[in-house]
Length: 401
Image 1 (cartoon, one colour):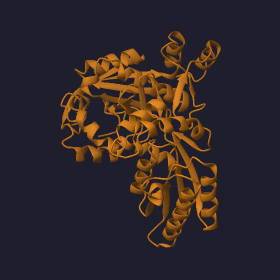
Image 2 (image 1 turned 120 degrees about the vertical axis):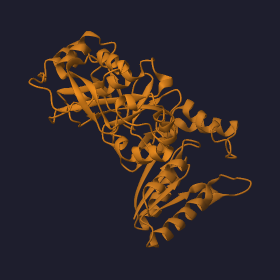
Image 3 (image 1 turned 30 degrees about the vertical axis):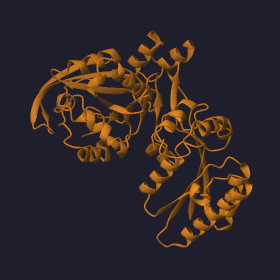
Image 4 (image 1 turned 135 degrees about the horizontal axis):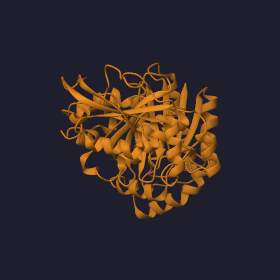
């Protein structure tokens, strides 16, 4: 049986991630190490920790005997190397297939999470200082996941081995959508200024949003646009295989953003990062984008990103709205994107750096000028010629609604 040990400093989110894993994977038993040494008043010495190790092994052993149990997840602060080693050796003797991970975050994030969890009796200023001082130790351990910009759901997915991309820009984190994002997503998707102009109806309730997250918004290469300053999603951006993208080396760009954040350059910042991913990582040669007549905000975004107008189609069906509209289609080739990068290197970049980012978050850094020019000479993108397709889809929300 698989056993996952989640280590990390107090307040980093071990329990939240462990419980999310249990919710995501039926038949999973969750053990909170604090249950196993719940002495009042608390005493944390070698004797009590050894007792807790024995209790965890006893509980894990019983779960392993249960026919209804398929996996065990145990979360605990293991700040002594012998504690983790004792658990690993003990679980091995029980025949468990064990893996340990260590969660960390930066000090500012830890302090913020601490403040949001004041109901826990350990969330005092004294213990916060202790937890902050322990961060370097935990960061030095193996199999570390930096959760600074990760939600509990995303942390749980990464512990389980989900390797989907997460990107970081100056102000944003672009990550997969989670069911727990439903309320924040609904906050903006219920606004009639958001969906209808892009071709999809307003969300009717939080449960409706949950279903959409489970569906289109969970598609590959679809990202929640998360503000670093709040950690909350405010929109969506992604690459899709829609009607305009007819070949394997093509995708269609889609995006939407909550009205309170319009006019701040957020969509160009998020879309620029996704386009870098499209041309650099996915090696696409063309990315299409479109908008319905009257959606001037979307037109301006496309112009800022370097898209070139290709055609206009009349009476394009908009199935989700039960009507037809005029749509305008634009295209950005790999060659044009690389040329734009060379001309404005302070805005765009060609390398994703994951060094010292154990969670795989990509931070793009500018290449030397020579590298940029060399990359521009590779992959000549040819413009699509001939008649436009019968169906040309204007800008859709990221993730088919």
